[in-house]
Image 1 (cartoon, helix red, strand yellow):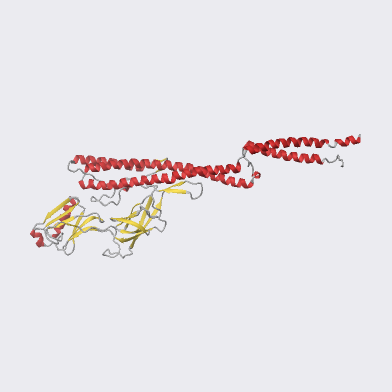
Image 2: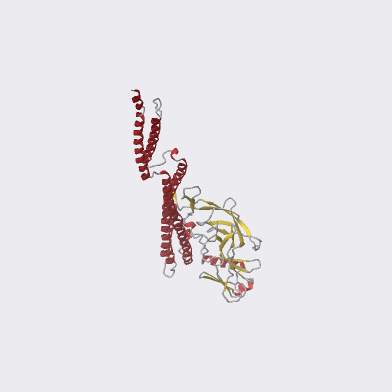
Length: 486
């Protein structure tokens, strides 16, 4: 064995091990004090990359949870306003039923009902205008679908919650059958001879009847004018005219298969085919066709995308112009009536932590003029805003429109409820589970196992103390050479 005093290899070795143990102890203390096993990139480069990505996901999901909760609050606010409109519509129906009790009502009672109806409709419009969530309007139409048409025969009526935007190409409206009116056409001309004999003509519609007896001094034109005047005075939605051969033509003002009326003439063929027999008019036809190649249901002149249609569910258009040949005949494949262009202004909610994880909610305009559009009725009401209860027919027709409005509002509330329950709340539950799992996974990668690190800390302390002691012993070895020199 050689003895050297210039270089103490044992001391160098002990010192190196002491440094290693001290560094290990320092790392252990750092992990224990921070609670993290990755405090800098060098502690675990691969785990650091994955954990930072997870932190981004966690931040996104956490915010998506807040977004979903805000969306639920907005939907609940919207539905609460619609519930009040529903209540007001039910009251309107009560007023209409009361006004229809013609036998017991006098003029002052009907006027009071009409004023009450006007006030209630004004209240509906006020809710539609003022309902908001924060500063965002909810029911004034800014969050619905706006439509424009190309084609003189088309008119945009409305859209549903599930109606999609059309894009720049628009939705093609193809018609295979145009709507027609119920009519009764004479087969025999109303001649001077029949007029002088005293022809009796009768038209009945919706329980109201006009009866006219011709006089000997009247002309055919005067008879037609007086018939039309009588129908207008009695509130019948009937148009009376005469063709170039002198035959009478009686038409309903409304289109479709539902509006109808009855006619009577004392001479065969003037109105009724048999003398002295009441006959029903020839029924009209409902429009038929497709929107964007998808099935649509026709009611009168209104064509509506059926439930389940991919893009046009709930979309309604009015087909009002002549199409096809001059006689109205259409080819079997139909003709294009025009195109409708829809812009989607729906509410958009970011309900996920990643790109594209958003949902849309279309809440249309709920002003009274938007309710019950396209309902065929004898009074010619175009919407809830037109109701007039002062006539029996008006009160009866008001029930039809109010029922349609109640259905529309109830359907909208149902759609909102389904959107909240099946989409927002379900998604919120999934987000919370995902957030929990992401945090757990990120914790496994980044957090310190305290039990393991405490064991390492104890070991590090012992190793450091041992290395310190051995370094001291190694530094004493050269002194043994001094004993040889004495």
